[in-house]
Image (cartoon, rainbow, N blue to C red; front, side, top):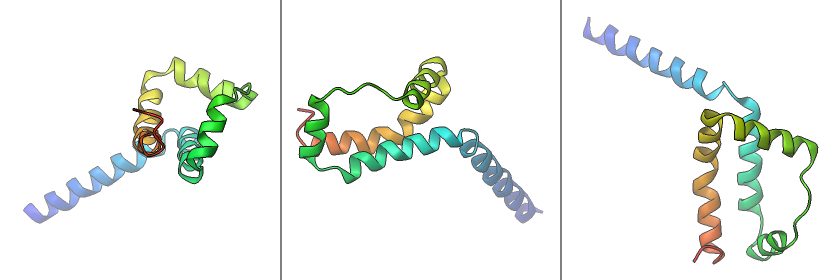
Length: 96
């Protein structure tokens, strides 16, 4: 009886995690793109990109609007992106 309870609890947990991560596939794609950009760029490239301000594309503007208007989506984005981006910025000396 107890073993069935644990199996049931595990299945519920897996279902919850699967549904929670699949709610915003576009957000996941954008966040992964940002993380890849920082992981694949050299410190020199990041410094150069920081000094040159280019206008956002229409898709980037739409994504920024979604993040500004939805606190939960913004939280999910920051949760995915924060660690790798901040780590790279520290490595590059861009955060003192």
